[in-house]
Image (cartoon, rainbow, N blue to C red; front, side, top):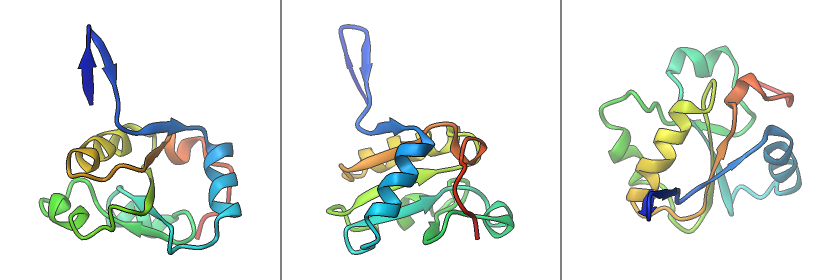
Length: 115
């Protein structure tokens, strides 16, 4: 997050569920991107976006977990409503991950498949 003259500039982009779904459906090569679910393990196991990896934001080792991510990949991040994933994106950006997209409205707005 960067503040310039009272304007906050995030180092990630919020995208709507239709764009999020289109991107992951058209880019099936997980060598160039990762989908990150930042909810709790219970929420994750109740249903998650296909190919999503669990990185529980509430876990004390969250910062250590994200340090294991490839900073050259694009990361699509989501939670239930978009709030925790926005926080996670800020932390990830501070850790040096540049290509970040937050699912605006989280799974509450998601129309795609869950596993």
